[in-house]
Structures are given as C-alpha cells and as structure tokens.
Amino acid sequence: MASASMRRALLSVSDKSGLVELAQGLRRHQVELLSTGGTYRTLSEAGIEVKEISEHTGFPEILDGRVKTLHPKVHGGLLFRRESSAHVDAAREHDIDPIDLVVVNLYPFEQTVARKGVSFEAAIEQIDIGGPSMIRSAAKNHAHVAVLTDPSQYAEFLEELDRHGGKVPDKLLARLAHAAFLRTSRYDHAIEQYLAGHAGEAQEDLPLTMSMTYGQSATLRYGENPHQRAALYIDPDCLYATAVGAEQIHGKELSYNNLLDLDSALSIVREFRDPAAVVIKHNNPCGAAIADSLANAFAKAYEGDPVSAFGSIIGLNRPVDQATAEAMTEPDRFVEAIIAPSFEADAVDVLTTRPTWKKSVRLLQAGDLTANEDQRQKSMRLRPLEGGMLRQSADVGPSGFEQRKLVTETAPSDDQLKDLEFAWTMVKHVRSNAIVLVKDQALVGVGAGQMSRVDSVRIAIEKAGNRAVGSSLGSDAFFPFRDNIDLAAKAGIAAIVQPGGSKRDLDSIQACDEHGIAMLMTGVRHFLH
Image 1: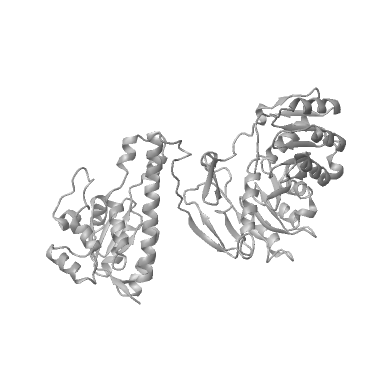
Image 2: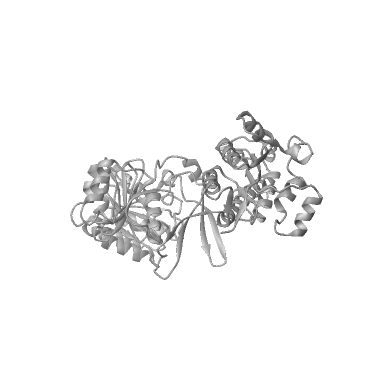
C-alpha cells in the first residue's frame, strides 16, 4: 500500500483541543514542527520542540497576523510534487523544504456571527485567509501531504502513523483531503451568506444562491420502494431535537419511510405542552391526543383509529415511562418505531422483551424537545423539484388560533373551544385537503389528501363513526361550498374552525347558523401540500 512519509508539519489552530497530544505523537516520529502565533506559544509552554513559521520563511508575521503563512516557502513546500524531478529541482533551487502535514482549524467565523450583537468589523476579522489557502494546497497535493482540519481526526491519524512507522496510507490521505475541501466549502458558504445579508442583496433566510453541505449519516436498505437507492444526510448546524439526529437505542435498521414518519411524529407532539401522543401511518396522523398523563394520551391517540394504528409510528413528548410502555404493548398492538425525548429503564425493558416486539420495534430518543427552539423557529424547509428547489420558512410558532373570530350566532362551549384549538393544531400536519375531527382533545377522524374538500369531510366522518356526534372539525383551508357544512351537520358535528377567505364564506356562515353549529375563522391557512 502506497503511503506518504511525515517529516515536517505545520500546525496553526484556533481550537487547541488535543493539540499538545497530537504534537507529542508527531515528535515521537521525529516530525519537525512549524507553528504560528498562539499555537506556537501553546506548544512552547508545553515543552514541545517547535519552530516559529517566521524563522522557517525568513519573513515576519505582519499586519496584525493577517499575513504569516502566505509565503512561497509554505505553499511551495506543500504543493511541489515529490515524484517530479522538475519540481524537486525547483524546490531545491529556491531553498523550499517539503511540508508533509498541515494541521489547521479555521478562525471561528460561524460561531462569531451566530452571537448576538457582533459588529460587522468583528465578523470580518474572523474571515481566515491563510488557513483555507494552506488547507487547499495540502489537499490538492494529498498524494504526498496530509491535512487535518478537526481535532476529531487526530487520534486516528496518530494510530495510522504508529501502525505504519511514520507514514500515512493513501486511503487516509484521500479521505482527509475530501474532509478538507468539505470544510472550506462550508466555511466559504457561511461567509457568503453573511455578506449577502449584510449587503441587503437578499433576505437573510432567502439568499440569492443556496448551497448545502450535509454529512451522510447512514445508507438505507432502499428508498420509498425497494428498487430505489437511499441514504440519510444530517445538517451539521442543526442544534434542536430532530428525528434524524435522534439516538436509536434499540431495534432494526430504520427505513426511508420510517424516517419520514418519525419526522412527522416529532413535529406534531412538540406542539403541545401537555402530555401528548400521536400515531402516524403513511406520513399522516391517524390518532393523536393530549391528556393528564402520557399513558392516557397514548391510549386516547391509539383509539383514534386502531385498525390503521397497527404497524404505525408513535411520537411522544415526554420520557416514556413503564405505564406508557405497558399500554403500548397490550395484546394485538404493534408499532414499527417509537420516538420520544427519552425512555426510562423500566419502559425499555417492557418494550424490548415482549413477544413480537423485542426484535422489531425501534426506539429513538431525541432529547429535550424545547432546547434551541429559537433556531427551530427560524428554520427553513426545502423541497426538491426536478432541476430545482423550493425554500420556505417553516410553519412553526403561533398557529393563529389566538386571533380567531366567532362568525356564527352559536358560540362554542369551553370544552369545544379546547377541542377546536387541538383540531387547529393538528390540521396543519395533515396532507391537504385536510379535515380533522376532534373529541375530548383526541383525534377521532381524519380526511387527507383528497382532490375535493367535501370528500375529506366525508372520509373523516366515516373514520369517526358515532364519535363524530358532538365533535369539533378543523379544516386547513376555507370551504368553497356549503355542502361541507351540511355534511358535517348531518353527522352531528358541533363546532368548526377554519381560516376563512372564500368568496362564499357567508354561505358557510349561514349554513352553520341554520344548523346551530359554532364556527371560528382564524384568517390563517395551514396548507400541507
């Protein structure tokens, strides 16, 4: 296996984590160390033999440190091809010594601009110039030069160096080069986004150009169908709890469709402060509820549609306790996966030892659902198209229910008002045309994905059966005709919440008044197309 010898290294890091240990490991292999500024001081104070970069180049650091490694003896030492006699002769003629390893982590630009109140001048000073230049030079010539851009790489690098007697295998060199270009790409993108916002060329959340750098977390067995290839990628900058970032503590490998459903489940239950549970099937909720305990919330949610609930995905907004686990594992019940902030030990024992459950069910703990909520509130949603991408702000935060208006002669009771608020929260998570029926703060009927809204109403009523009587209905968009109201009245529905905005709103209001149905209009549409 081909490899590159490490004889001279240049270290220049803003993050000093693991620096001394790395340097000590390099010195064990007699690697000469060059360094700059604060890195040089850290190594010197640790008693490690190191040469300052200005001594190596014969040129001092100038302009408050802005220029220290932008020198032919640095970049020539990184870029010359060791197998080329012409390059070797040129290096010798100009007294350029090879540099075989670059260790650089860049100025903390992203962390700086993320802080509140940071001045433009302070942000600009955190744009690293020499660091990316050295990284790119080393990565380009990775057949001969290694490049480390993150402290997490140090341990493996030293292990390989020890294993191969001071040399680094080609495969590791190539992998490190890829990671290096990935890092500089993300760094440049962060700077570009910041400057675009500062220059007023685009809204901060709707840039003129868009690039993404997501790291692959897992390859999946297949995509939506067995003939489709798939993998999971993670946004490294996402700090709030997500399904894709959750820790799987038990069960089989997750599928593409599992992940879609888990994402939907978590997005629903985090809407509620009370103990909440949701049952997801084919990316729509077939049951959901809030209650005084998690176990009761689950029981109410599961009864929303017990037939559809078999083989479903469960989302919960509280740590799963033994009582909830016992409720989930009652006879004739089975779910594919459960996502929650965490699982108590007794609950894990129940869920992973019951027959038909122990080998199959996946358990995912997402962590605190309230942490870094401000980032989630500002998050964007991306949707790929063939040849393009749609970008929009997330439909999170206040639902609009607080600005509701009573438009009918009949007003909802206090209990109906609670059900209407629950319905309004749930309906934005159901595929359009979305209709939900709610009773006692539990989902009892759902109509989703229909081309005609009245068909969604009809399906929701059919799913609810006798439970439709006295229930509250939520609609994600306005009613185009009063036939929806007439159908609801025939089923015994008592109250409705919808955004309004139709040319025929008065027809719907008149129909509600004729049937004695209370109706609220919010003025906010929650369409999930």
